[in-house]
View 1 (cartoon, rainbow over the protein chains, first blue to last red):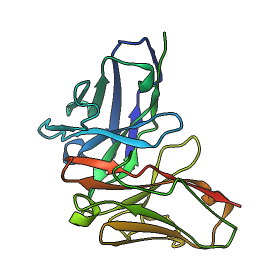
View 2: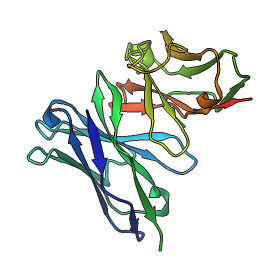
View 3: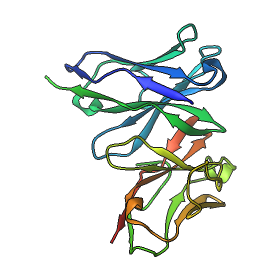
Length: 117
Length: 111
């Protein structure tokens, strides 16, 4: 069974950096891209970026390009998403999801990040 | 403003059929990139409902179907049930942006 388990909720101050983890099991981590998606309150899904765990190559959405870093550790089958210079607009649930045939069939449970002074 | 355009809301009575449209452009759906659909129930993460335009993952009822033509795609739900009340999102890839893209989402209300 494919499982993606994310780290717990975070509360950050404006200007801070958050790093969320996503540990996978049930498939070969290096074989499939890992994506990150933002779900802000009252808003839709926003694709943030992806990583190919096999070679570490990344692709980021233009909106987050300057502030996001996605990494992958194949020794622990874990992906990470780091978002810097946080503002209240970054308060959202962040989910990892792994792709198959360009779709996203497997998702983590989501991590709530609250940015507040 | 989402790259893929969906109606903000649709509604239907139990047992009826509803469709949700997803309109793109020549750099995504029109460029022959596949369309996938997700259902997001309140308080949960999205669930893949339709992949590669018209395929249902195991466990998804055949009341859900997808289609694609030109620069648009559609999700159809027949025999509406109260449990279908959720948000629905389309997703594709955009070659101009080099990015995965989602529609803005459609809230389905079962009357």
